[in-house]
Image (cartoon, rainbow, N blue to C red; front, top):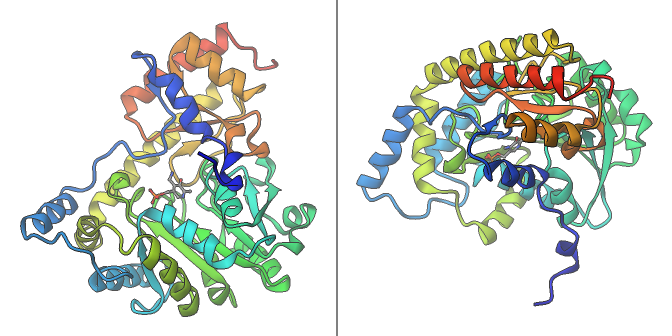
Length: 385
Ligand code: PMP
């Protein structure tokens, strides 16, 4: 069958490709997946079961159950000082993934330039291209803790960008951005009339200080779509629930696309999400404490091994510098020691020479995996390679 031109060159996800290799062996410790090793909080699962027992198996309103939108708005008001009207400014989506896609389709005209800091999550570039836009890579540096700066935006020529994707806490680096760093980027966006898609899916997984959102910077609320979801904070990846918040007309435009493509987000998951926001703050806190413990462990182990490792402050990834070719390192590590990590270059040129190591796995596995990496470094790999 003849395929549309825009999909012919669409690459396979580099992460998946790597995982198929790892799955072919049964002795592998995987530090590769970007999802929590926990299950969703029990109360949230019970609410899903209860909704099924009550026969709540129909569509919901296109924008999502009103109670859920109210709880989302209340959560953001209370937690992050973001004020959004549940009726006009919140849209419940099938994962944050759908929200990201809708944002591109609602904002991007053919030929529009969308700046994306690099390294970053792999879905943005293809999403922008599918919407007809042109991704513009803005390299960030380990020396700046992988934060986006005005200098970096200017160096990449982002003045000509129509929109900017901002993903902090960041996948794959674990970087977060502070209020003052965001103020600098906000200034650039106001000056050059750049709209922002802020993917804040890891906001709850911030280990030092509070998560800061660019939408709360002066003049930014009206030019920002904030995206979040339940996959990471509530360990609900398989329930596929996310949301977008933004100016009423923008959310309305996204909802019009959503009406024709998705109708409504999964109903069972929406009931689980209401309960998650109602009663599961303690579960989130426990998971965050556990991630924080692992984060410190992994970071200090890499330092002990002599690998240059930026201290991750959010999400659940460490991003050490492997001192050579990241793809060769990941392939040889998998072959020699049965440990799967993701080569940093999968996340853009800026990730070259680094490895994404997920610590969303048990402490026991992390201890075994880091021992194996240490032995690999001692015997198979030279840091100066
Ligand atoms: N954004 C980022 C930065 C992510 O890492 C992920 C999941 N890996 C997503 C969005 C997608 O999340 P969801 O499961 O809500 O679609």
